[in-house]
Amino acid sequence: MKLQQTIPFVLFLLLPFLNVRAQEQTQPSEKPDYFIEGGLRYGFALYHPESFVYLENFWFNTYEVRLGLQTHGRNAWERPLGNPILGIALRYTDYTDFSDSPELRRQQRDTLGKNVAVFGYVQAPIVRWGFFTWHYQIGLGVAACTKTNELLSLHVNPYINLQSGFDFRLSPRIDLALNANFTHSSNASLNFPNWGINEVQGIASVRYHFNNSENPKIKMDLLEKFEPYNALFVTVDPGWLWARYNNYYYLKTGISAGYERHLFPILKVGAALEFHLSNRLMPTREYKPVYDDGTSYEAPKVLFSSAVFAFGDITFGRFAFSVGAGAYLFRTPSNFDLAQTGAYSGTLDKMPWFYEKVGLKVSLGKKQNHFVGASIRAHFPVADYLAFTYGYRFWKF
Image (cartoon, rainbow, N blue to C red; front, side, top):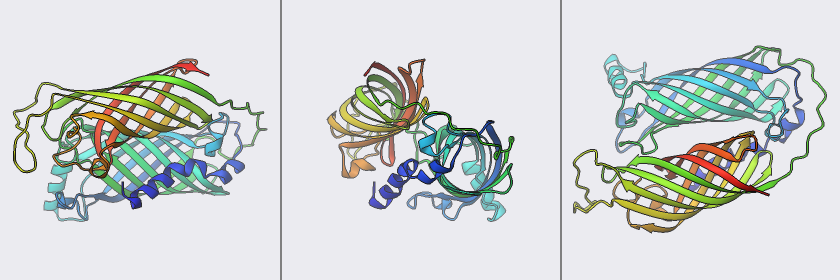
């Protein structure tokens, strides 16, 4: 990851810990503050200069509807985040640039089609001052596309949403929101090709609160003191991918054993030892892989790797947004990687021992010893595979 990309990404992840002023000004409310929000997005798609020139200067509209709940600090994890908004959004995109000629619009519509995205999100304040709020947002979900193409080769793809903007209180029930938004959708190497599509758009929306959000305040209850704890856990992480360099499907399975510490109501940190085994499945087509110089080779049927992995979880009750990085200890064959196409790209180009992971976890059960989730493992910005996780915390102390 380049320095100019790394700094904004790290600052975005630190935003949950920068909203001190918002925490001090928020009081719990007597009634749940549910709302509905409708918005219009307008923006452009980032493109790959070497290939998809038709995405240059490509502008399009998106429409969205949101249902949300403004939290009021009744749970311990809400207060450090400044009492965030929790919600679900439905987003419709028509990849047609109506400023172009009808012939070009028809070509774009036939190429990219339309998509409908559904995602859950957390929106928390950075600064809250009177009628004004500056916020950030993290969202994860899926997008269903009407067309498959060289950017999105599956009809259903993982969907990532990052957003920051301003809310203006116009009345006790009406808010105006202005936001800048980045979205990424790709299939995490479940199929090939997998260039993905990245969108940058501005959003204007109006929010209606079903209950008067300025209703009388109630006295803050005495807060239960949070007690940090440690836990040992194991996970199994199955998934599959289409290897770029030989067009074969592989089943990829990971297992791990690790340690985590719940430091604060909203933060866990930990480390694990990971092992990954990849087995080639039945080939989907006749294909003889070749190196960049044109010489052919035998594609490996089995790949194995071991690694150490460190992570941090931003927790929202039973939910956790997880980000981590790992370093390989051993890889065989050492000169192959399923996520690459011939020569190494992404992180592997400069640091072949390094990978990243981002995902969502949900803890289950009364004692929250079990958890499930999904994560994308990548050599930034090239996805390795989409892992589905089951984990068990077998010892808490």
